Amino acid sequence: MAKMTRWPAHPFDGWTSAPFRLALAPLMRAWVILNFRDLENIPRPSDAPQAHSAGLDSDRVLLFGSGPLVGWGVLSHDLGIPGALARALTRRTGRGADVDVIADPRMLIGSAVGALDGARLCRYDAIVVFLGVGDAVFYTATSLWRRAVTDLLARLERSTSQTTQVYIVEAAGIRSIPIFDSVLGTLAERHAQRLNRITRAVSAPMPRTTLLSIAPDLPERRQYQDYRAAPVYEQWAELLASVLTPALDPAPHRHESGEADPLEPDGAQRREARRQRAVDEFDRPDPDYQALLGPIVELALTSFGADGASFSLVDGERVRMSCTAGHDRGELPRAGSFCNLAIRESGVTVIPDARADERIRNGPTAAGRPEVRFYAGFAIESPSGERIGALCVFGAEPRAEADVNLVLLRELALTVQGELARQASHA
Image 1: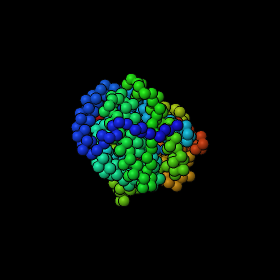
Image 2 (image 1 turned 90 degrees about the vertical axis):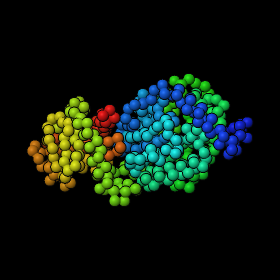
Image 3 (image 1 turned 135 degrees about the vertical axis):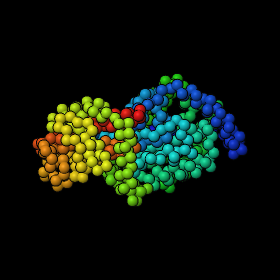
Image 4 (image 1 turned 180 degrees about the horizontal axis):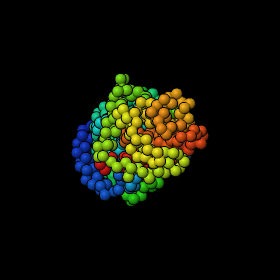
């Protein structure tokens, strides 16, 4: 059960005048910087900042901010809040879930809007913001907090779909963090209370923004290894999933790749240019796709009993079958291709019989030799969310959609996507 954060009366309540807070701020900042060094040796995830759970018609969630989103104490986002939330949502909805995370342990409200640069916010069904603890311990001025949190929430509402829900989690439990468990931590908690009141007032008139007052049940004292561990992140995930699920259930599924970005009224050409830049970024290190992805593509071929399987890049006006198993069709024109269709559609693209599908029957892939009648593909995204290509299986004989394991194809495609993200992060 989510619990309301209640703040008891405290003898420091009288120490809240503006001059006192102004004088205290340098001391608080020095205290935080000194204590922050203790966090440097605590492990945190170094893998791709995303997590997935099995299923179709996926809900897409962005986690943004700092605090527990950083993943202190675990080595993978799958063990942190992103993975736990994806699984918790799927248990409730029966759908898949894709959870991305933009997290920085040093993120404060003043730098938050800038941290969203390059993020395609219009593709998310829900966005959850964790900010405030850092600003509370740094004693961020209330005037700065009011201005910056207003800018942040306005940006999120302006840049997202009309069905996207935005949630901001109140800052709480500062003294439950071992390095802040002191008298100065109590002062920071009192300042967090002031920041939360401002956030409540700012968010109240925003139609798609909700302030969440939730926190997991933690013991009063703990060691570092107990504070940031998978069970704690699972508690956070269950609390968040209980809030998000009712809002996600009636949402139209799912955001199409061609959906207009609210910040780009003439966005078709810009989206394609951005997508091509993402393709170029992947190709810059000249990767050996066959060595990197060959085992996954081979598994797709055998799992589906297909004549051919490939990871194909949509590069400019051509489709490059960059990693293949079975039939290799080389390079094809993009126009009228199966892969071009796959990157424009939401979820798995299945064409049971190309001869009967007017979108594709005269295209270069269907009309080539050997003829392709059956096709199934799932779009592969870059870390920035651009659809750069697809994992595909195909064959010369028609096949009913009901005979295609769509969940397995999605899982294999997400494995390809994860390998590409890891390769890009080490380039």
